[in-house]
Length: 388
Image 1: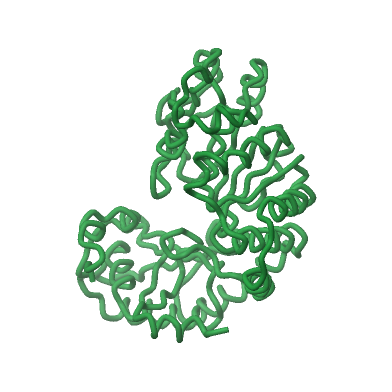
Image 2: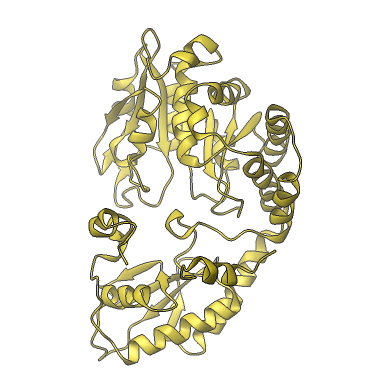
């Protein structure tokens, strides 16, 4: 297979030194050799997609403990498909009518604070199905009475988002409380844990459907995974013959997700931790660092007397060659947060060198935007494809 760095040169794109982690903006995770080999193999043969998805169902069920599962093109597609499934069930005529929801329960209850923007709002993905989103609670508070007051015969599902982007200072009902309240009305709860590392706690808690991004933690090619109750997973799959057709996943995505799922749930949980600790040791040899909130996060402190902000430093690193993208720029504490999950040892040495050079020679960045807003920089978007 062609080396990734060589391919970048041929395509005239910069290979990023990734200290940000597994966000979509950087192409998510890297893909292990066994996953790549399986994808290459399936691309060379023809298979029946329904049968391949049935095989994926068996793998997902075995690995997660869910009754069933299927593969989607992404977790955002899974949001739309799950909303559709909650409204239509396995009624093929209803599936064919969407996004016309006449005569169907067409409301999806979503706490306001859970309507996060991951590249697009959660609610927009739900509305693609034709569902009407009913927001409850506030940005900092959602209690049981908020959910209860919204439940009626028109509600098809309650969506619950497990994400670090949900206000950490807020006060929200637990998933278990949400499931108990919705379950008293036989209304399914759909959990979106796109960047989560393990769907099993949500399945065990009684969520009807659990959605995740296979290409983030698990390192699959771009794909999403739905798991949960057999009847609703089947309804999700059947919506591939409706609105899901516009977001279909190919055989390479299905097989890549299957192999990555088997490796992630059947592998050594400590391997990634040990690897990240080794990467952190390389960084610590030349940078003032401290451990982050877990073994795969390291924090670089900007030394006293260095005339630069964390935001400016992060933007300069991103603008360099090779570009370095960090996980977080904390101006208040004058720190850069580095995610180590995608870094190789060679990358770590290069990143340490780039950061060291930027600290010694601080310069004003060309594009000084809030670092977390690089996803949504209006200028960068509106000038595409000639924004460089």
